[in-house]
Length: 217
Ligand SMILES: C[S@@+](CC[C@H](N)C(=O)[O-])C[C@H]1O[C@@H](n2cnc3c(N)ncnc32)[C@H](O)[C@@H]1O
Image (tube, rainbow, N blue to C red; front, side, top):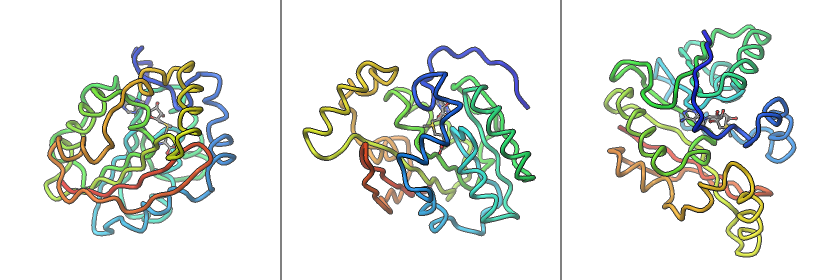
């Protein structure tokens, strides 16, 4: 299910439209191939319905569907271009995953619909106002006791590298996010009503640190 939804505010997966077609290739070159797997280890298999928020090319949704074939997986994103890529990959893999696009405002699902929401490298593409708005929406569509599993990225811990990355990013569509000295994601999770917020894993990469979070509604 796709249609062109005008949303001028979102930041594309890698900042620029022309890079979207190379997203999987670039991610494989910069990150370890199975960097999403720690999420799988923390998934509560009793859960029946999962939303992959900001599903991009569908990598996380595909990983979850292959790992938990009986679980219903839906993906949602704001970018119709990247969603086309996801749909092609899902079809090729012959998997039963539905992806859709929306305008980045209200998620098109009723309250308490999902048992789990995953979001891999999405919050690092959002300005703080959108982080809050998205977490409020995720909270709304999650059942009570529902789980969120998140991977977030931050520039490198080393001061010099961090400054270098910030300088590079300041001339890309990520400049607004880089300018904000916003708190880490646990702060937003707690302030939008999530409980038992825990960092479950941390991975050092060439460009920064990946933080893995698990929380409950
Ligand atoms: C870096 S990509 C990550 C894609 C995928 N989750 C993965 O693991 O590869 C960030 C994704 O978030 C999407 N995105 C940006 N703003 C969004 C929003 N407000 N709601 C949902 N998705 C959003 C982008 O279109 C992009 O596909």
